[in-house]
Image (tube, rainbow, N blue to C red; front, side, top):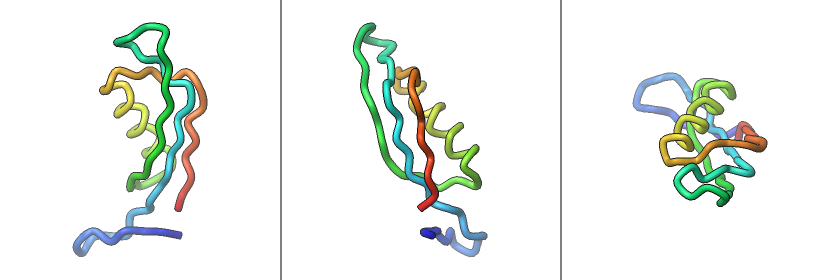
Length: 70
């Protein structure tokens, strides 16, 4: 599994995510999807981070968000 070492800290797992059917709150009626990677302490922490990030960019998740450890 892919893990990243942060300068002298414990290993932090790397996760990939895919978010389907994101409602664009700035342009009603528009939808999008997103994917990427991030480091997080757990799958639950990764999901919370992805949801918070999407909302801060004007997207509301209306479909599945898949989190997979790399």
